[in-house]
Length: 209
Image 1 (cartoon, rainbow, N blue to C red):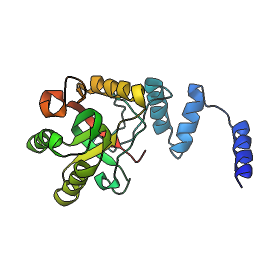
Image 2: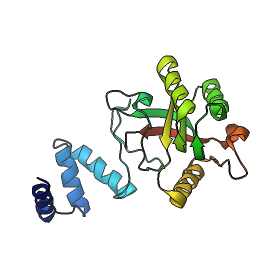
Image 3: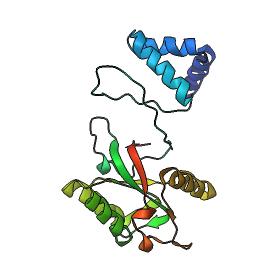
């Protein structure tokens, strides 16, 4: 069975054609939009702005016309640690707006180091996204219980990458959002956290992967 799958994949790759020019992108986008040329043109224009590796999201607006809004952001390959954090059940994702972000280069097993961040989240009525090497034990259990029973807008994510690459990813995310990376083995541990250490994002979308 696996041999047949491999053969089929190679055959499809040989048949495939890369979409490169703007005209080709416009054609594919228009077909995907059920033949709506105006939507196809918007998608092609968005591709021009963000590039082939950019992210394009389609949202319903309140205006009577379609428009493109360019927002600076970043994407990485790591999803929510538990599906209990999902707040959009239809699309199986976590969707927050105006969120705080906490970055930790280490394992978090107890809830106490997170209390200050959680209190800020509740006080300011802003969601909290926690990105750490590992979040488990009492820390993860307490977050899930508060999410389920009290609707606490929180989500835990395992930081992407491995070894030094993971540290660099955390630093990149912290710089992009105006936050700080906590590291108990360095000078700054979670016990010293205050609002200035948290990153901020206008919109955060988290899927399984």
